[in-house]
Image (cartoon, rainbow, N blue to C red; front, side, top):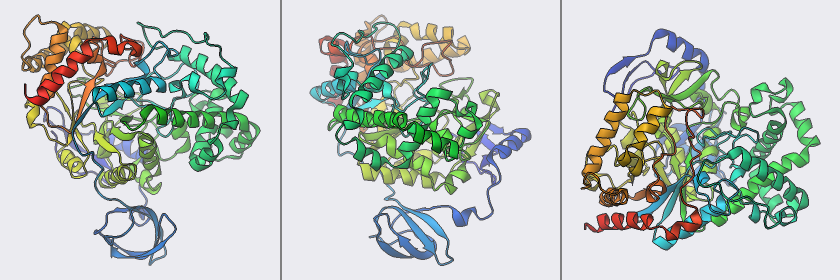
Length: 612
């Protein structure tokens, strides 16, 4: 736990407490570099920035409000209790027009405890998958979960990457947080595909091995193009849906069209195409309208297939902390994202060297002057159609670790964000979508963060591998789990293979890695497992202990259910070192019902819930 620190006018926190409770001071040269990247906030920022508030609160302002629905209200300082929630416009007495965002201040919550599977969808292949888990596989998982009495699925980010080779493997470095990845489309469910494919055209799922996104994209892109040319725009509902999405969809589709020709990083494009609102881009969008329409059509397909996949089950989608520096959102929001900076975290329990996640950060004061649109659109799009959102590294709504390009992660510093506003925006979007919100709060957490999340009904994280307290004492407003995608599976920990994996793929000190395993084994021992026990018994025991938690959400790892030894990701490693985010489940989804290990895990969980 660290202490809340003050920041200078640029938002830079000069003094902070690290994960070992040691005080740190940011060097002056780092401060100077960060100030240059941030830029000087304008003197009238507070008079121009949006007002984010709640009913019953004082705003210190008076004026006429044009509400979201077109109605008009008068504001006299305090927001009335019956004031409509939403995104409005306030014209102050001084004639200044400002965004007025009225939030309920609390997120929506389900009524009772439930359990669900956490799954890396790309790795959840069936024998009908085209080399990568897809939305039809998500439907299979949903139906299986419902049959077993589960209430949700927790999935990796499904956001789009650049439509080029090589495909980005990390779901946490997407090109956009507003649109989804066409790799997740099930081809047989695409209108017009029957005119392109025969029944034997699709290859079997590559089990075991790795997920080959490049091969999957080459195959799917060809088939999708053919289906689009056969009958794409004839599909009922597409044109109306496209109109409803507005300018954001057209901008993304235009970026995707340009990326296909010029590459996935807009910084390398011809100079006249780097401005999304410039005449060259407008001209090309008109000349290649069919190509723009194709990419918009793919997004419609994704929305339709996701709706069919989720049904009435809650699917908690993951919101990454950022986007690729050369992607669609970076192109659209130039000037709002900081140049020459990436975000990550200082050394902590996950990685003793710190981490650099490769995403450029939103500049706090520029985000405010953009009326928070980049954040609002990202949250709304990630929630859409599924009923839940997991905010990766939720501490980033309070402060983010900025790292200068070319420097190691430890050379960074914290920059603070307008957390009160951002959290209330999350509450508003949750309220509108009736969506549960989970904040991933693992790592270096400063004082006040957990309290701020709890006040707004944002569920925190509780991971068995990290907790010394018994699960029965964990807060009810939490998501409880044994492990995460960045941590060892039960089988990998028990066998010792995870240590070998980490040492072979990272530069972490062997002593740190082995000490970490010893600590986790000690926690696992509290579940009552004996040395030499079969791994299936160890998994059941771990989840029996988890079942004692009173947490609102109990997330069960599908890797654990299938006794997979490899974790999805080793933090701080690269694609050259390890097949991160590319490891398929060891069993095709079609064969899940024939497996005994998931049933044993669920039996252990239920025994823990009943106190047996």
